[in-house]
Figure 1 (tube, rainbow, N blue to C red):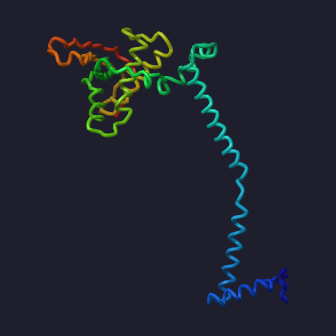
Figure 2 (tube, rainbow, N blue to C red):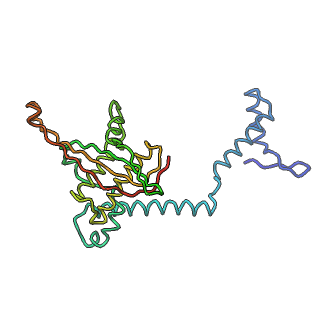
Length: 258
């Protein structure tokens, strides 16, 4: 066992055995004795720093703990809401139907079409236009903008088309049609949410392609049935179905000025 020696000034010096070991390493490597001693002390310092990491401060620990708790709570609430929305009707889902629909629709809607696909039986062309009412009461109406054509251009010849261009507008209209039918009145809270969802999509698309302010929006939907494969080889004039044209009412929006 080595002992620590002290010089006349009272400072500790390296143990005898350690000095001998350093001298041997210096003779074998050809390096000066001071360089080996500095390297040895540096390694000891690095080892001590690795063995004793800097502890996290108390405020930082509280922030991290609160963030983890919020994430876990949000995940549990989301799973419960989605589960209640797809579960059979029960006392909890019926009592909190409004809160569940607000949380789930339209962004987290669940369905079983992955296992039972329902191909589209018609082509839908969705057009939109805007209008602005001046202080004198005159209404300036813009031309029709084909929103479906904009999405089709973004998908065509694109090997990796986005989900937004493929399904957002189409699914918004399908959900609106399912909740409203032939009437444009929202008879439930869910129907009103889906109406606002469709309106917000149209407003965002028009705001991106318009250079003028507008405060109302109108949609025009043209539905053309798709002929069955068995009839595609027959005379097109005999199987052509009439298109259905539907004008939605003017919907008030927040004024946009690009």
